[in-house]
Length: 366
Image 1 (cartoon, rainbow, N blue to C red):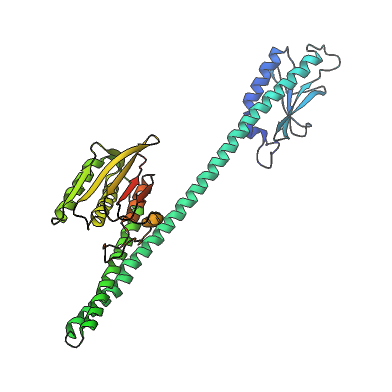
Image 2: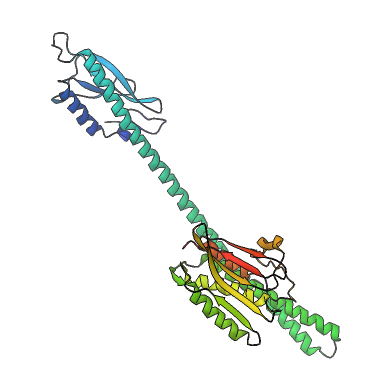
């Protein structure tokens, strides 16, 4: 049977209701009502789709339509339900009132079934649309990732070569013309080499940051206290001439990527060591507190601190609050921390004051 009608150019009654199940339902009602003949008509109410009585489908449908009731979806008829009047000489077994009430009830029932079907199909359409959007965005992301890989390759090769040239030719000039150049000229060459090498380190950091965003996330249970203790021991070995006191709260663990979390903690602890460089009593803490029912981790130091008004700038790439001469670095470590915390569906922020140390807080979804 062809679909008789489309709602909003989309749906026909056969899309919304299983017509065979509806026919069986009407047949049951026909038997229960004493043999009332029930008919399903197209949206115009003129063309018969099928008719049933207590004995099954009716091929010949004599008589006229009575109690024609529309089945509406979104205010538009998708079909009509009607009772059929018997031949004039036939004995009426069902009263007109019963026939009318039955037809109205069944029309409302069919409308409810159709509305459920309509809602289901609308949901399927929205799901299909969403799936198509996700597929397209995934494809766009794949293209963007490929472009980023090409960009990273260009940075890695095309920019490194001239930097190596600048550094190499500066060194050659310094060595070959050392006696020709005065002290100021030699100092200029040293600065030139230092800046080219610094730019090389910045390029390396940018490449690492871009790779970090594409790294595979491998969740596991991570003992942050143990990890912080291991990193603290390494920092003490790397700074044998300093007295570094580490206070690490035991028993802190979280669900996350162990490698990424190690990078984040390493950057935070390294920062703390660096910015306590002018203190003889450097104290660095790693611990957690509870806020709104969840753990908030922190790394706290008693170092140089900075102006709180510039706290959010810290997490940008190459953002620095101090002169390189005072505290070395290129200003990308906290950008790593923020990216990693975001990978764990968390957030990171800082509280600080000049010469009062700094505390970096972060949350993780696990």
